[in-house]
Length: 78
Length: 305
Image (tube, rainbow over all chains, first blue to last red; front, side):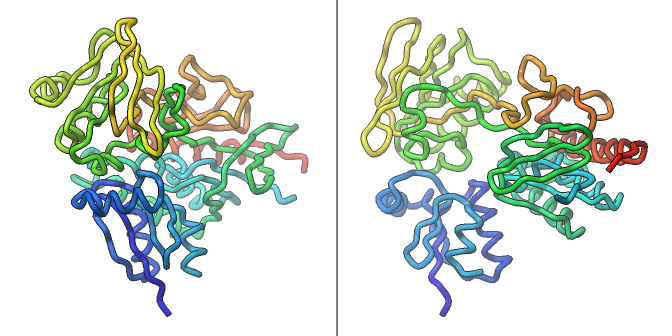
């Protein structure tokens, strides 16, 4: 079954764009959460990860901070 | 152990362009890099890379990557080079994962953000302290933030942040801001900016996240309540892994017109070198020049093994 993937991002963040490009290239469906337009989403992200950087990927509950390709591949099993 | 013709360290504009030229010269080579795209991937809008009247940094980085991968180039990504040294005719490249041998090396490892070396900096990195306003700025809507620095990158960060944050402090260690006049004027017009000149950062503190910054302003200590700190004090070359090559006063690797360093067989290209003007297109051009120089170097060289 496909994993649930959420990308916490901002519009301008270069690594967010790279992370989303990477998911698209691998045909992974994901939900984008733009935290710049949504303070409660930003607060939620900070509470969940204890940090304030983006991108953060939530893959079936596993939080991956930054565009860490190896961790993302491992979590997605690709 | 296999001996490569060439190992390219770094996959920014210089390293990737070098890889394209090396592939077309049919060299037996390897690219080792922590990331792909380098600083270009971090850039916002690019309007001065010939052929593209407008492209974003991440898009240009992706084009570079596609171009590199077209040649089935051997690439070690997410691998950090720890040491490069010459032993006889062979150059040893030691990484955090393996050891390699090569007849030549191109160092194209670029630059990274300079750190403040202030107390609390490491502890609060990504917990309110950031080196990229473009990335993390939007997380600080309605908050109070400080930008550290007084050059163009600091002014650029401050100009992005005045639109997002409630209040922006600029902590500058000289007696007035540097950077372009047009940017300074825009900041002067902004209602939510306070500039502290002759000031340096003493301490970053907080609990789970940053809550304040202590500065020495004109030799007086001040504590400012802030939730965000953006460090924009310039860049330093990534050269810790190569001790023996000659560098200039900015720690950039000295190269000649053929991208040769002070050690034969070790070449360098792009922002890590003393080449004047740090631009994506210049780094790319230098990368191609370095790869062609390597080709000539290898062609003219008789190896014993």
